[in-house]
Length: 398
Image (cartoon, rainbow, N blue to C red):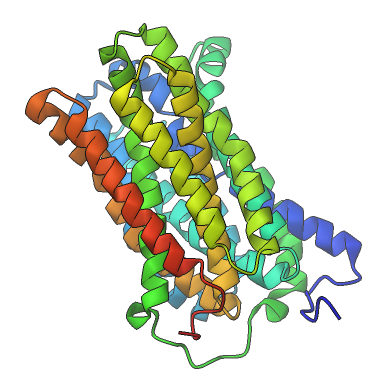
């Protein structure tokens, strides 16, 4: 028999459909509430009388929350069922997003902390839930989850200005992300009632992940792919403008990173789960990233659209491959959550420093040679870690 693994929703198409909807609706809330502030910078600073440094806390705090809160999730799953934690996280996202439109700076900071913490909780839980709910379809579900996450982020940015104009108030697009999670928690009420026990595997003796070389390889791969994505997304417009392109063209080329990331998000997990050995996929992704970065270093103005497309495709594919490895390399849902927590806590703390370091290196000589050389070296290290992470077998196998 090809599929010995039984899923909790086998032979129950309605429950299966609701579980798919629940996962994707949760994913839709994972970025919009954070990225919505980008296009509204000037309105928010004017409306609330913010300094630039106070405003930068609104964008840096969530990444720090991702790092710290991710590490606490396995302990929470031992006390509460995962569907209950998802419900709590969605309510917290709604509350956090609502607090961010108040005029008091302290409430805005509290809202940002609530939002970042709740998103960190879902970031870690969902790969474990995919493993527990859909043991036969981890690739397709991870792909759909990654795509929904990217679309949610895209909508957060694209709807910000039109909604502000339609309501003549910058708070309108911010409030959208306070209302959306309340709608998205409805299918989770059903999962709470029916299927808590099937998800929770019998207590296994937990292999200490922090001493497991393969768990560290997956963690490093996750951290470096986030560093690569956030660094390039932050600095590519400046790099292209320095190369003599118009700011409008630089903006369009940068938006292609997200656009090309979406098909890559979907394809990488589906291909990964069809392969016994994911190392050829790691090498393909690395080749694309290296060509894109080398193009930016040697001839940025020659073909910026091609460089951005290669970078977007490789960044999207490496993110969803990292998420797929949580399911493929773990032995059960509990271990998948623990691996997801380790990789995301360390990974996001690494990623939070990426754009700062790249900016500091640029300031040294006002040249992109050092920053891009560093990103090329980090890509090679990411590739080597990926080759260890992508070897066939699970964490307990050497």
